Image (cartoon, rainbow, N blue to C red; front, top):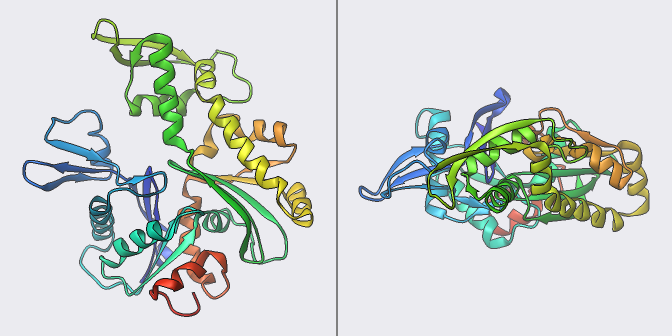
Length: 340
């Protein structure tokens, strides 16, 4: 049984063999500190964010794309795999995604967590490789393909050709930081504290970073910072634009910087074929249009961008013998066969 895991800061997705994505839930664990037991995992735990008593901690085991709480990450992976497989079993191969610039220590933590489940072989694949595979791009040709994968904790930017990464960068900017920026904006402008789930809803509903006009509106609820009482305020798409535009500009600068060091022949291919946007951040309203305007390169939002990396992880089993950068590094740990 081949299992692919997209272990994201915001969500965990699991693929199994030819069945495609069989599990998709938030990467959240609820822990009962009184009994030292896991109270909930996934969507059930996500619904508890900001709504639990002191003795229940709601934890995101991943921060900025890498494991920040090893025990909780181990629990998350085991519980999600148990739900998928239905019983304890030895799995021959697991492929897990990691950000492009994950350190050896961070990569080792991911591998160890996967091996705790009983896997015989664990492979790592870098997120840009999986993202392009999942977007249906043929990366085996001597032709440049560029991807910007905007996840919950990191944005991975890379140019690939002939099954390998030519240039790459990873910045700690993703959906979570955008949510936090909205929370800060509302507290500074309206003196109301809102939670991360409310901020995320505002991002999904109102984000428009290319041409906001204030016509789209929604009510957000929280706590008044002056009176301490429950309060609400009406936000517009222009409010969200002002909250997030500095982060979006930072993202555009990172893409521009990578284009500047891309070999000329590959840059020409990218000008012809465009830049692929994947990950949840690809759904930010107007981001593709703004990127086209600022970089003067056609920008394409991949089909179902949120699931691109997970799909690519599952497809990677068919390319293990040919993929280069995505599989080289973990051979150092002796966990993969020499073809890795």
